[in-house]
Amino acid sequence: MGIIRLPLDVANKIAAGEVVERPASVVKELAENSVDAGASSIDIEVAGGGLDQIRVVDDGFGMDRSDALLAFERHATSKIRTADELFAVNTLGFRGEALPSVASVAKVRLITRPEGQDGAWKVEYDGGRLVGEGPAPGRRGTTVEVDALFYNTPARLKYLKSKLAESNRVQRVAERLALACPAVSVRLNLDGKQAFYSPGDGEPKSAAMAVFGGAAGRMSTGRSSSPGVEALAMVGAPEDFRMRRQDQHLIVNGRPVSSLTLYSAIDRGLEGVKADDRRRYPPCVIWLEIDPARVDVNVHPAKAEVRFADDGAVFSAVREAVRQAAEGSTQGLGVTADVPGQIGGSGTRTAAGDIIMERYRGHFAGGRARRGQEDLVAEAFAAYGASMREAEGDAAGGSACDADKGQGAAAAPGFGRDGRSAGHGVCGNRGPDIGPKADPRVIGQFMDAYIVAEMEGQLIVIDQHVAHERILVDGFLAKLERRSAISQPLLMPESVELMPAEAALMREEAESLETLGFDVEPFGMRSVLIRAVPVVGGDEPSPEELLVSALRDIADGIKSGLDVGGRMRRAAVEMACKGAVKAGTKLAPEQMEDLASGLFKTSNPIRCPHGRPTLLKVDLAGIERGVGRR
Image (cartoon, rainbow, N blue to C red; front, side, top):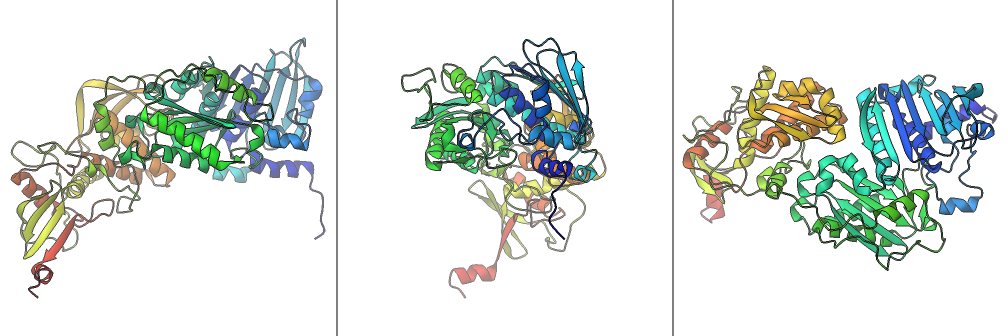
């Protein structure tokens, strides 16, 4: 077959495959155009996850008729003029691909009006074809409406998630934009309801409050400078640490990016500060300002990744800023003599970078914000102990539980006054023939973590946490099978503020939460009222910890492709893990006997739900060999 020149519409669809991956990609490109146009406010409206309609309205410079038409031509841009400018990009956009790419896979209407022009001009595209233009009413700025995204490329639709998932991605774009440009007001409406709002008052803390809610008030700040690099970090408090990096935001010269170098620097900055938490992820924002000539943004079609000319300097600056923030030791970030007006030798800075660097000075006085609940920190470490996924067991991809690493109290929580367990709820199914014909005889407790027992001529060492976890899980799953999870009404409803994605997931998975035993209702945009929680048994976590943990495990299940039953099973396993008695907890003899005998009435006595062994067995012959009798 001979080589042919592809038709323009085909070429644009190919380009759209790189630039317009999903609705959130469209919102990102349009919003970045608004920032580059000098907008002080951006309103985003999304319907049907962005597949039905996307509408972005700004109050930027606007365009005249000729520029409005030229904007839909490939590689037509006002951002750069020469190839040399690619090595010192000062704007968020520069390729000139966004509008033609979007217009090739959707129906697009653009209405724009520059300052001083009597009326606006309207341009309409359908599947890459110009179908209309003419005068229209409109204020200064630009409005872009995108309808029926991917209507002419239906194969793309099968790679998208649910409308809720796509809406959540759009919201993350809005959040990143607000953090990158705190002087720009960002408003997002999802299906007619306001989902996000940042006031655009130029205060990074205001943007952080819009994104993180109350957690922003518990954040610490740190700053580091080196030749050509300035880094500012806001790092969350221990009680707000997350299981994944989804709440870690990286801003380079006003551009939201993803960078393994920066993520690694964050992790290193936390080393030695919270030694038990090195493998968990705090919510944080990193603002990095670099000479544009020393950072390459022309790496990825979506401009989501960057490369640094000096990885080492960038790594060191971010690591030090995070270290200061995590220690809460920064002494304020007011204007100082060593803060340069400009960075590097090019004498240029990004417009968004100017906003950040000029606005944040003086707004981060002091280190960690004062908190009246310092005693929650210890609880938070234990509550989030199950966050690392270390082993796959029979929990459909559940996580290995580390909650037993915390220190317990003098008496065992979760056991009744008579010494019997408050929540064993064991299943009748004994599983394979591996249990004893009689209950094990408990000898004692070793290091307040292991139960030593004898049964059928063998010495048994039982891990008290994972054994209790197995017992609780079997009981809870049995209740789920019967759809009879027991709820415990709270004496007073508890108000909890969720992260935006968690609040959206709660609304979508309301039925699953009810099946698990929760009674919750929305109470504002991101707050909920908890009226009842599941009775898991054992050392019950707080209602907030139970709900947030359940939501995160449901989200993990969705990401892993689990069905509803699998997602609820995963959530049940994690709730049981948090309720199980911890290592370091002294048990009474009756409690040890109850736990040891209960273990062998479960469906799988030798493994916890995450795959960890529950016990170690040593027979007499093994002992005699060890001491030289054989």
